[in-house]
Length: 530
Image (cartoon, rainbow, N blue to C red; front, side, top):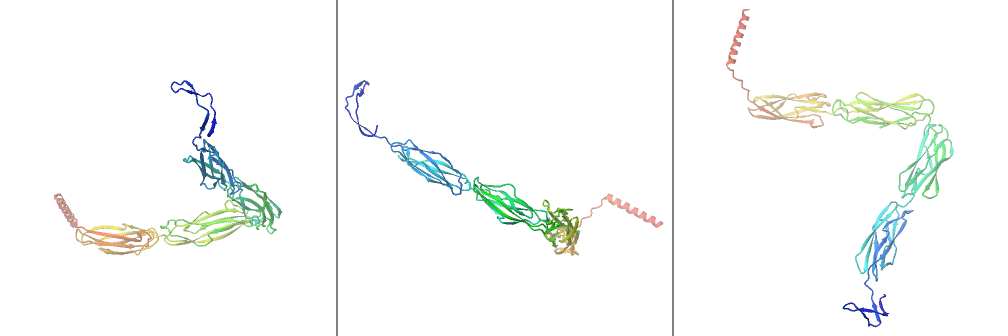
């Protein structure tokens, strides 16, 4: 039935007797019946889909849009619900973010969500709130998941050296010179690729050139450089330089092929020569610090880097090569020698390190390190010496004391001078020695030095006091030891003790003495008679 006042005709109506339910004849007459609408019910909102997977863009900053369709169910009698969506996720926006749904129809449908492409994958969420407005009610939230891949952008390529002239390294005549061009990608993302391929030399004059092989492929956001490696064989010394043009095909994504070209020069070869030798540091004085004691190795050692490289091989006869041998004078030790032989063009082991060290002595040592570079050209050897001056400082003073510095106790008869001594030993260089005494202590003759690998004795006496008392004194000795033994302090206590009593002789002892006296008398009498 529709709402409002509408005429209706009723016929053959029956009624029930209110007591026992028997039917009775309805005596009502035809007339109007009023039908009224019920209360409104706000619709429930549904969303499809609730996860949006955007396609990859083809450029940074490109907008990609996807829709979410709204469904309204259960709304009657003008019931209404308001829908509003928002997101705080970077890279995402909602161009169409709101709608009003009445009964089962939404005024704005669908909603539009947007991803702005970047060079990285983006993920986020949006929240849509459905709030009943007729009748009013609490909002119901729906989370929309947002996924946007990185844009597929082919990387740009940079070359070092840039397209233009290139001069190959100078090597010996007939030898191979190698060079390369570094290709570095940037600003790419996603899965798009750029390539460098089909490299070839053209217009070749005066030398043999070998072009880079294969294809270099760069994908997405990678930034690692790759190399185009190429080479040439050097012309004979004195001949014109070789020349050629190297051309490679560059393709950025789905774009056209772009040629990149370099004018390459291959210098004429060097005349025949053995590899050269370079020392680091160069020839000059090498100074070592002092050792801890005589004979001890000075801490650490000095190293000399030896670089053997270069030269030019004529390709016939004995190979041109160089060997370096190093030796040092007495007191110094060399390791890491010899180095080589190193042949022309040998890149597997062209370098080495020579180490030199010294053993500390009682006095400073001077010596030399001599490195001989033996250079062979067609079997003829030329030796070139390089000399390094060596200076090894004397060993440090290394004093030990017996007894050790600190308290010393001695004892003797009252009012007497008791003798004592201190022995200082030295395992380092010679050291000066000075001592002073105070209080009850008096020094004897103190040596002026503690010799290297030797010792010095400091004599002293201490005057005691009355029996049962103690007197005190102090000795302070200074040396050139850089440690705690540079100043040695001895605190001396002298105790006065009474004389030790002689034990009494018992009767047996007395009898024994009498026998001894008689025996001695008889011996004397016999001697006189003779």
